[in-house]
Length: 268
Image 1 (cartoon, one colour):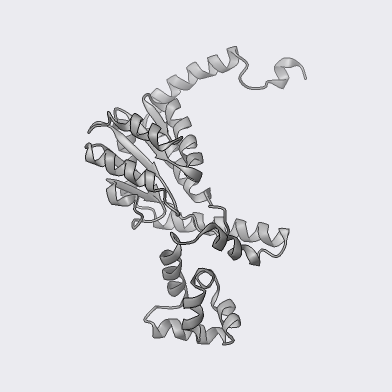
Image 2 (cartoon, helix red, strand yellow; image 1 turned 30 degrees about the horizontal axis):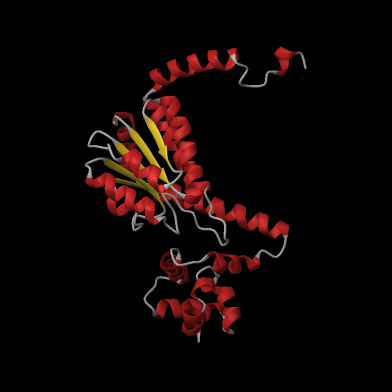
């Protein structure tokens, strides 16, 4: 009975608690837990995790909307979304490979050119990363507007360059192709994605993972953004003198051209 429900409703079952699944099927929570044990899982959470990984790249937008049905009120929605983001941050922090993180920082500081490749919702992350890396160092390019622009900007990439690919389920096939091309040209590739099993990781020298699970049609970018924030800060610390010099010059420019509002100066 439980197995049949999961097969027929895998997209919903993957995000149900054991109690919720039991309620849907008409059995107790303990029966659901025993079912997971019979399948050689250590417990229901492990079964749930396996289901989530299996379907993450298969969920359509319509299926994601249906999963949002449990958001019964604005208050409930707020709490569930914030809790999901907190969980994503905690899992990301606990699972990060610090040696890979350090190697990624080193590659960013040493690369002759840096190309950031991201499409669809991941363009937000690319813009954030590119904005700050451009303040820290030269030769940073964001290739996130169209696939034709991406390959035109990458066609000179070589062994001295770093290509950073950013992508989360459902993965953009064009981002995957761009990383494959960069790797074939001898460039170093850093993948920012959700899992070491991600197709972006297949062509990468370094893979940094951040969880983006969300029971909704909206992708959660909170943990990925936090990971990029840490990456930027680490690069800035490593290039401390260069960053200090750059920002000193920028502060003069910002003041000269009134880039930021200064209420005290205007007397308001």
